Structure formats: C-alpha cells, structure tokens
Length: 547
Image (cartoon, rainbow, N blue to C red; front, side, top):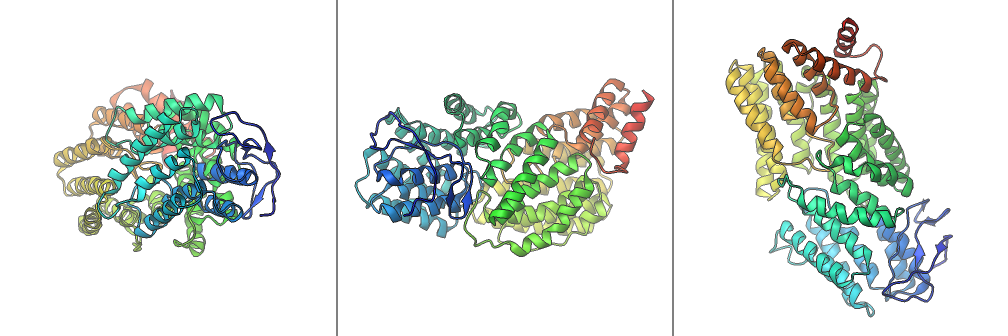
C-alpha cells in the first residue's frame, strides 16, 4: 500500500517490542478513504508488519470515535498490506458491532459480519496471546447469537475484557475497552450508577495521563451521560472536539453532556459543526442524529424559526438517507428516530397541540421510532379535548409495543409502555377525570424515573413530571405543580417548558423569589430567541420588570 500519510512517529516502551516503535495516529495532513484531518493519539503495539502500524493505529482512532465505515476500510487496507495481521480482524469485528450504546437488538447480518471477522482473525497469521485475547473477547458478542440473548453476550464480553485487562496490566487499551464495556452494560434501572462510576474512574485516570486519546474523552462522556453524573464529563466534553475534530461524531458527542447540564448554546454549536461534517462525509444518519439534538436545543432557547428550518429540511435529508449505507456512529435506527422526533418536538415543545394531532404517520423498520408520531398525535389530540383521536393513536402505539415485546426489545417496549401510560392520563384528564389523571401521570413519572433515556435521544420526548406539573396547574394546584416542575428540572435542567411552568407555579403559590429565579434563567437562556418571542417569554420579561 502506498503511504499517503504523514505520521508522527515515536518510540513506545511496553510489553511488545516493535522495530519501528509505536506511531501516533494524529496527523496534520492524512488521507485515507477520502478522510483528512486530526483524530487524536492512539498507541496499540501489534505483531503486524511495522510499516502498517501507522494505518492500524489511525483505524483504531477512527474506531474509538465510532467512525465505523472508515475504521473498517482502514483495517482492510492494513490487511491488504499485511495479510497475516490477525488483530486487524478484531477491529473489523468491533466495527461490525457498531455503536454499543444504540439500544436495540443487532440484526442477523450484522452478527454474521462480526462473527466472520473473528473467525478470520483466529485463523490468520500467528497472533500473540494478547491479540488472541482481544479476538476471544470480541467473539463473545457474536457467538451463540441463536441461543444466547444479546444482554447475556454483552455481559460475557464485559467479563472477558475484565480478564484481559487484568492479564495485560501494561496495556491501557485493554483497560479502556473494559471500562467501555462497563458503561455499555450498566443497567438503566440502577440508580447507584455503580458501573458508570467505576468506568468513569478508570477512564479519568487514564485521560490525565493521555489527554489526546479520543476514546478516553468519548467514553467518559458516555459513562456520565445521565443527569446525576453529567457534570463529571464537562472537561472531556469541552476537549473531545479539539482532540478529534475530523470525526463528525467527536463534534457531536460533547452535546450529550451539554444537554444533560442544560448548556444549550454549546449544544447548538456542537451539533451545527457535527451536522455539517456529517453532511460533508455523507453520513446521513449522523447528520439526522445531530439535527435532532440541534432541534431540541433550539426549542429550549426559543429559536423556533431555526427549529422550523430544520424540520422543513427533513425532506431533502431523507432523499439522501440510505439505511443500507455503511455504518457511522449513528446507526440507521437513529436516522429513523430523528425523522420522527424532529416534527414531534417542534409541535409539542411549543404547545401547538393542533399541529401535534395532525402529524402524519410514516412506517419504518423501527417500531420505537414510529411510536413517536403516535405519542405526539395522542398528546396533541387529548390536550385539544379530542379523546377519540387520542385513543386511536394510543392503539397504534400499543400495537408497536407488542411488536417490540415479541422481538424481545425489552428496553424500548418499556419506553412505549411509559408513553402509553402518559397518553392514558391525558385522555382521563380530557374527559374530566382530573384526580384519576393525576394518579396515572404520577405513576408514569415514577416509572420513567426508574429508567434512563437512550443515547439516541436528548431526553424523553416530553418528561412525565413536566406533564404532571402542567396537569396540576390546570387543576389550580400550583404548590404541587411547582414541586413537580422542580423535580423535572433536576432530571432535565433548563428545559423551557419546565422553567416556565415552575415560574408560573411559583407566582401562583406566592413565592416571588422562586418565580424571579426561574423567569430570570428562562430569559437568560433565550437571549437569542426569535423576535417577537413566544408569548411565555413576553410574559416572563413583563413579570420581571414589575419586581
């Protein structure tokens, strides 16, 4: 293979001696498979030919940023130069698995690609015991997929990576992948966050010693991508885009943390950059995923015109969307999710119940994405006082949930069950059964609190506790409503509707100090809002002027 790259080469002490030393995967002007730029620094000694080491480490840097298509092309190019480089098949296998944080069962074709890569690696060349350990661990993800469920295989992979990291104590990449496996397998119902905290501690210690490593910054963000832990990821979030600015996903990932802490302007900047980079790279799912997070942030800051432009651009983006295209960090399921979520968010966040009720349903291969439209239609119709339309939409959502149950998609089946409970509460409210509606929505909120949102979404389409607060306000119970809005804000900081609801509830409860605090935060968050702004922002500014 012709060397098209300019590499920074440095020697590395370690458990495996290489004639040329290890190579830094960062480059000023690197070209491979049409990709140029800076990806961060990765050291991974191998038994492969010394002249393919730079390409191997660059491919691994891409893998750490979930740029799966280019990582696969890179590992294949390595094999083209050194057909006995068994460890390259390990990289291909992990790329075949795709985004490990994407909830959902991997399809059979994906499993087959990964299994084939592992088998090729095991039968190629003379891998070292360390390299064979990586291949054997990856095999746990794919082997016996017909008899072992995905969750069981993920746990087996985690345990295999733990053993490898213990055996190869000098190999910090093994520790990184073990920490990643801990974050991947963390139960969404474990509110002690034991696995995430253990993973984060290992990653942070390594990040201090290796501040240019893309995987460390990336996985710290993922490990702490829950409300209670998100502030711990701020340093990594601020640095990841600088470490690997040539990876569209590295530009997007910081917005996960910015969303969790309610830093909307930083989230907007991150997703504008990511969407542009993904569009340039032809990664349409990644562009859609960034656009969904971007829409969410726009709506929290009152930039409704910008959100509308994104919504209206979907038709053009959909024309470029090919679910069968080679994978990026955002799988096709994320693309389908974004296409349903963006119009629903635009209607629901602005309280345009008529627009929500009128959303058009579109079938896709992803039931939990299709359910978004039914959920929004049902909420919109119920809040307009049209229970029959809400009941019909809820019926469709329940059929979609049944598909997920039959497919053993437990996580998403639970999310749709929560949505169904929320719809039932609003239907009860619409027919005048206020107390029953409160009880039902409170139960839905408790159920939602017991799980976590998936990385595919910036948060629940509408938080249940926020809806509970709005119900209580309509029933003239502002003190109770205030408590619910405040709880919602601990989970989803700086949400527009929760801040506005908390301020209104505080005013009606006679708590001027809290009203001032929440209205002030709302107005500050919306310093770049449309002019004229939403009526709620006009009201907020008028109230503050009177104080």
